[in-house]
Image 1 (cartoon, rainbow, N blue to C red):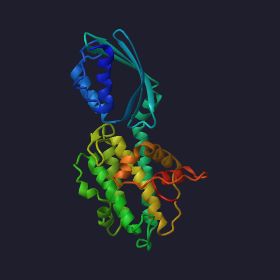
Image 2 (image 1 turned 120 degrees about the vertical axis):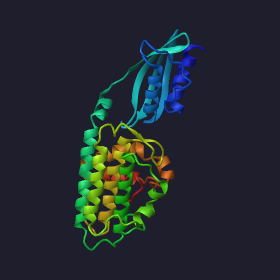
Image 3 (image 1 turned 180 degrees about the vertical axis):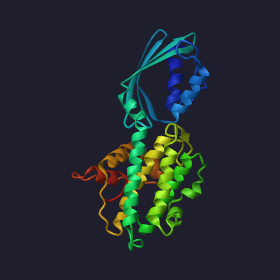
Image 4 (image 1 turned 45 degrees about the horizontal axis):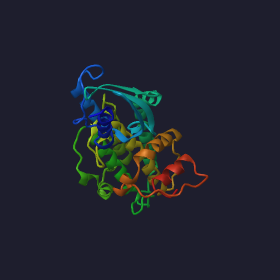
Length: 302
């Protein structure tokens, strides 16, 4: 098997098998100190890869150079790199990945930032809930739901995400949107009940290595960073839904909007819409601010 064919197996594992290198000939030493260890690392990394493609490829004897594009949680956008694979006696003996690491550095340092924004988002929604007195039965911006149902859905959804981050197995039936909306999560003190759930959420995501771990989720395996990114999206958007009913002015935090919008650009697509989690996107008005643009991307008329 020539060098290009061996490299083809390697990239096929990234593109089609989520980093499963079982059938890829890897050698120990000279860069791969432990072939089994590399395979384990690749499977873990592959679970976070959203898209992988080889743009160009060149080969000289036993050296294959590839220009690759990939998208990977928790990074927004596309990363481009050059990768050199050194192949000897039919096995890959060394790999060198050359790229601008600034986006990766920011993402790896961003777990604390995400946790901080998660707390701000939860605090803002709790403060909103505290303002509601007699408007619980009013229609929310969630079609067919009252303000209380929307708040129940939000609180229950955040609780489910938290339980997943804690290592519990999610029962898909529990994730039914209407079921959560009809379950009383708020009790006699809605703001206190909501804060209790969000404090538990922050404790779960604040544990070491949770952001980097992989968890089973509704639409497939998800990293802790992905789950933590879904949480402020839920809090921000459903906060807007809830405020609509009693006519409370809703001032979306620009930094939270920016973070949620960056996640939603790649985290909310056809798969999530087919699963019924989001509606089809609406046209974005030319004068839309970032929050309105986010709402329309999520299929909500602003």
